[in-house]
Image 1: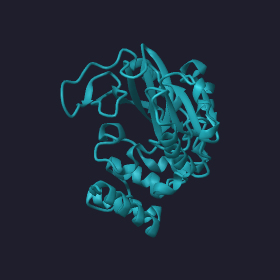
Image 2: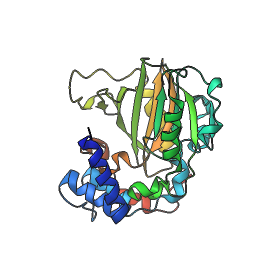
Image 3: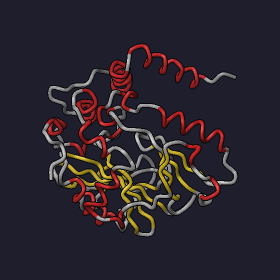
Image 4: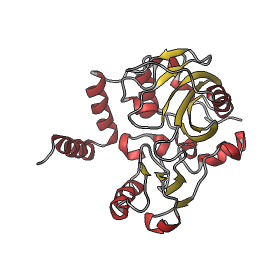
Length: 289
């Protein structure tokens, strides 16, 4: 039976092809928020991100959006020890030696957002199906999804990392917001798509409660994550530094500039963007120091 969700995806893709990325983005924005973006000046968090999508030219810092290239930036500022282990980076899926990989691992497209696959069992996965999906993503130009200049010119590659902690392991996502060189706090949750997240200020006080259940205290490594994010964000107008923490080892995964692309009602939370002015990205050069 043909699913309604499949029909919806087909309609969305057709609309994207017909009107192009910019108009498709505005269509999606109106559907989610019930109005057009307010950009003069942007006040709400999602309007501020929409400003970056629609008006800012972030192509000069596109290397910071590439999951492989950003490693050089992280290494130079906080050191090799804060990088996740890497098993290899490949131009095509068929270059990956399946037999050399550990039982559990992660494959990421370097040039986009959410184009990742976790593999629990190397010997049980359908390699042909996995390869088709990853190659479809790898060949796409992510800057054409919403018209985001941040991803313009990036070449799609596949980066393979060990699955830190393994399936079911005690792995936490810690995302710290830095604005104007100052940390604003961040959100923490188990590295599981279904996990509840809690937002804290720089002192560890809850400022964004979980949607359900009790809010845990901040992770023991939270304060150190703030210190690392502050160093990485010092030369940028604003950034969200995304880290993985396992047994108090901190690995910087990526830098995020377009949280939710302005198409999410909760991301980024207003408490982290209250003083953020996206017009700061109009400065040249964007990356200073």
